[in-house]
Image 1 (tube, each protein chain N blue to C red):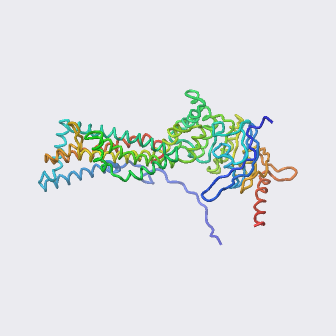
Image 2 (cartoon, rainbow over the protein chains, first blue to last red; image 1 turned 90 degrees about the vertical axis):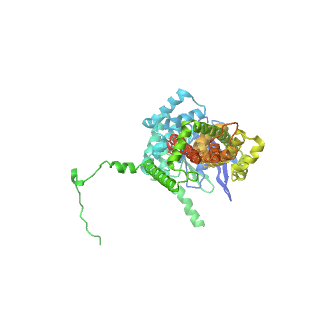
Image 3 (cartoon, rainbow over the protein chains, first blue to last red; image 1 turned 45 degrees about the horizontal axis):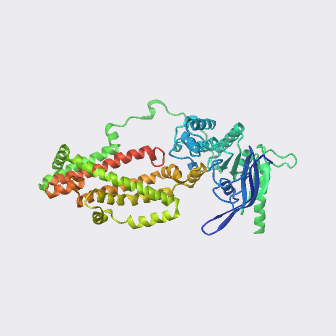
Length: 258
Length: 286
């Protein structure tokens, strides 16, 4: 299938703390297709963020391989742009516009006038044109995340990696940002790999949801979502209910077993 | 059982009934609110106390009056001697400071990019940072002779370790997110240090530069006091020493005032401007 953009095969990830060697994920497989809104969902400790970092190559798999457009990933690069959860991902010494231009220039994608034009185009897409010359510390949390998204999209990467980008926002802003992200996606149909621990967010954002179970992270299910979360005509259960049960059933088993 | 409470809605009072809503403060109140005005007042007070004590003591050799000191300062400024002494001191200072900062940048960059570099920085700073720069002066005199070379050597020593240490700890405190952002956009090596680490660590670097400057200035004046003159014209330290030998005590005081004034200007004008244009504008320091 040539539609597969990102191919993760048998990836085992481990990291060391002071005292332990921790296996974050164990032989995880999944395929992201072009224009997917692919969500990695699971409770804390299922290695979903670690998995995203491995795709960005901030961490090397001890087993398995990651292919992007058929090529094995072996370094960090601007073809996979990461949007982080933290508000401090913007460079505080640069204005909104300069932050986006910086990304384009540093990665040697574009230079001069072209870089500025492209930056302004994407800043307009996230409705921040009037704040283009503001410094990040004068913006609200939601605006900062929009800048980070604009910066990521301006790079026009093969895949946008989003690590719980809305987790630190208040509930209302979060809702709004989710809608905005979907609107942006309607416009350009970029491919996004999105990590979250919130079931409603996964159901809203994703068209494909990978469910991970914790300690160590393993694939539990891969589900489709149309974003509506309506009850299934045969079972009468909504998607979020099904996901909830799948995640919850583990805890019950563990409680009985322990 | 819960108490029954009535609901109510109120109209807010408008017009003059509320009294003062907003009124400008009096001139005194506003002046007193300014830090510089309060400080100026304290300085004037100190000047008066100084003058009074000088008059009471009546011994110009021990403690000249404020007026006599100001006159000596004015004479030195008018004759152009003060300016040339300051120029000599500041020129040497600038040379030593620049070399020190450049070496510190080199050391901190090596330290952040290699592990052996970190060890080198840690070992060297823990050895040399506690060593007063002036203690190296006798050795410097043997190595570089009487002259600018020796002073520059001790200045570099006084600046290097403080700035390198501050820069290194600044680099270490750069958030992991910013580091990952830098790597994500393909920055490595020197470009990574210049475009991510240095600006992100700028508050610490600036603090280091300030400490380095203060060390350097003290070391310079002290070094000039010890042997001061190189080929004819010495700096401010030598001006003080010379005047002490000639028992021109008001001029000694004038020299000390000049040392204080330069320190004040660099701190409150040069560094304050730099701070305002960088870390404050970026919201990294308040």
